[in-house]
Image 1 (tube, rainbow, N blue to C red):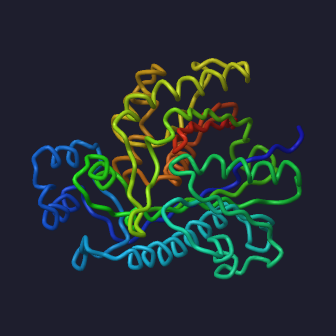
Image 2 (tube, rainbow, N blue to C red; image 1 turned 30 degrees about the vertical axis):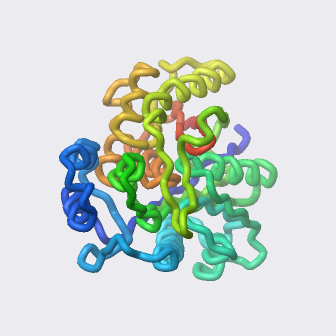
Image 3 (cartoon, rainbow, N blue to C red; image 1 turned 180 degrees about the horizontal axis):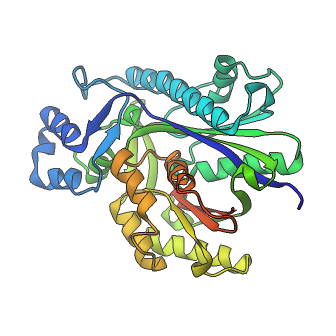
Length: 348
C-alpha cells in the first residue's frame, strides 16, 4: 500500500490555572453587577461545563484591563502554550524538531507580527529554513483549514513533515457589556492549545486524512466572530447560531459522505467541535447521533469549555486515546465565522 498522509502525533496544553464554573461565575458577579441576575447565573451553571483553564490569577483579576494588558496576556500565553503543545506532539510522534519542514500556526484571539510560527521556530530551535504559514481570524473552525494546509504540503512533498499548532487565549478577549452574547462568551470560552504532526507514513502512524469539505453560509456572516472596540476584541455570538448550527452541519456531513460513497452509519467516530451544550444538542438531533457517539465532545466541553480552534483537536485526542480499530472511519467537524462548517474524513 502506498504511504498515506496521516496524523502522526497529537499534543495539547492548557494554562496551569484551572477554575470550576462556579468559581468563574462568582468572580464575574463580584465585579459586574448585571452578572448577579439569576438568568445569567443559569447561563453559567447550565452550560454542562465544570472546569475551564484561564490564563489569569483569580486573586488579581479585574475587568478593567486595558487593551495593552489583554494583548500582553495573549502574546505571553499563546507562545507558551503553543510551545508546550508542539513539544508534546513531537514527543508523542517520536519526531525531532529538526525533522519538521513546515509549520502552520492558527489563532483568532490575538495578533502578533511576526506571527506565532516565527516565535515557535525561535523558541524550539526548528531549522531556520522551515516553511511556515499563520492563519488568523478563522475562529472555532480554524484547526481544519490549518490541517488542510499541512495535508496539502505533505501530499505535495511526501518525504516531509508538517506541524499544525492551534492556540487561543480567550481570556485575552474578556469583554463586558449588557448583551447576552458577551455573557455567553464569558460563560463558555477557555484557553488552550493543540498541535498535530502530519506526515506520509504507514498504518501505525495514526489516522489517514481521506478528505476535506467546507460549507460557507454568507447569510450568517455577521452572526459570529469578533468586533474591535477601543482596541479590545468583543465576541459576536448571535443566538441564531445555536439553532442553525445543526442543520448546516448536516448539509456538510451529508455532502461529504455522499462524495466519498459513505453513509452516516459508516462513521465509527464522530469528532465534533465542543461549541456549547445547545450546539452539540442541535448537531445530535440533526444527525441522529447518540450520546455515546458524542461522549468525547461532551467530555471536552465539561473539562475545558470551548477553546475555539484547538477544541476539535482535543476531541480528536480523546478519540485517539480510545484506540480506534484498524478500518474505522472518523469524521471531524468544526464551525466558525463566515459562517463556515469544516469537515475532515479520517481512516484508521
